[in-house]
Amino acid sequence: KNMSDLSLNITDCIQVVVPEEVFFTVAAAGILENLLILIAVVRNKNFHSPMYFFICSLAISDMLGSLYKTLENIFIILCKLGYLTRHGDFEKKLDDAMDSMFILSLLGSIFSLLAIAADRYITIFYALRYHNIMTLRRALIILAIIWTFCAGSSIAIALFSYEAATVIPFTILFPLMMFFILCLYVHMFLLARSHAKKIASLPTSTVHQRTNMKGAITLTIFLGVFLCCWAPFVLHILLARFCPHNPYCACYMSIFHVNGTLIMCNSIIDPMIFAFRSPELRSTFKKMFYCSR
Amino acid sequence: MSALRLISNRTSQQASSNSDYTWDYEYYEYGPVSFEGLKAHKYSIVIGFWVGLAVFVIFMFFVLTLLTKTGAPHQDNADPSEKRFRMNSFVADFGRSLESERVISRQMAEESQSLFHFCINEVENMNKAKKSQKGPGLERNIHFQEVPRSSGMFEEDLHSLTKFNIPNFVNTEHNSSLGEDDLISEPPIILESKLVMQSSHRILD
Image (cartoon, rainbow over all chains, first blue to last red; front, side):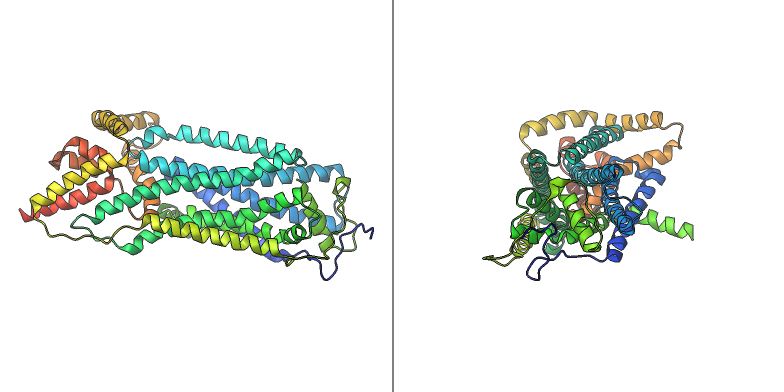
């Protein structure tokens, strides 16, 4: 009964393995897409506005997430091939750095989404004073604060990950932020609904019922994608901390690679639902590609 | 992180079953998990989690759809004077319902006085700040388009607010017969429809 390895009987939950080619393809696609957005925003002076800076921040955090996964895989392959020692101090430090990069990516994503939602909220509810409230300088200061906070907490969490005190706040932050973002968007929706009602009562208007669904679909996609991609991993962390020996928990933890691939899929989907919705950004991409040919 | 390193441990075991790849955390000794005597299916947490997530997302979608549902469009054939009266009344209604009255009156007081000054100041500041870079004409265009673009992108999604064009707004100041207060407190989409109304009035009269 005294086994040093995990038992791999047929009745046990076998670790679900994602093929490495799939992993690297998904990761590379995510990194490339987000890099394109960064280049487009930096090169085109029209995009030097708070809204695009927040989208850039989201792109950076997505890129970090994909980068982390890629580096971890490369690291494991190098260890497998024998190029790196397995018990070294350097590897431990590298692993620490990679873990903190991953947590930085998660926190950065959450706060970037929050910033984008707040920016849209101000655009809609304080439209006339938007330029006074959200100046470029303030947006950059907000981004600096967000990233400093995320970097600090990611290093702290990576160093003190053994305590339950770090895992619990981390997992509570996630649904709390989602709920807050949902509230912001719901308030915007309520305003849009009252607008639409007023317009519908105008004699010269023609309101199509179908177009109101698009807002609900868009918002469900925003939040649904984020939830479906990150929540499995957050649950994994909780279970690994609190019930690692429970067979049910162990079965959940066996699909860890799938959860990791989901996080990288989030990096691919996020640009599509945030950045590529803007017609100016799409036309900038077209120009970039046609000019490079 | 403990979970990640745990997983690295397992990953490596899966990837290379014969090599001796372990991190040097003895903390990780992780005894065998026995799978006997399970009452429920072994993947029950996985299934339960994903089903719960799917139900939550669908529920959220239905709630949002209900929130954005409007009534059936109400098409009347009233005469122009009645239309104008109705427009005035619902503009007033909207002004009340948008925020609390205190906020509205404060906004109106601030903004009715400073609307033109705001536009003029923005242009001046912009010109001062970016004098070295480009010509002011281009900047002015970009600046005026910034608010419509930022609101325009999201409004595409919402499909209920049209673009907020400051030039249009400025034009209505001269042409409109409604009060300045109404123009400032009401949202852009009402303005656009009012423009349509007024131009149609002019054509009919």
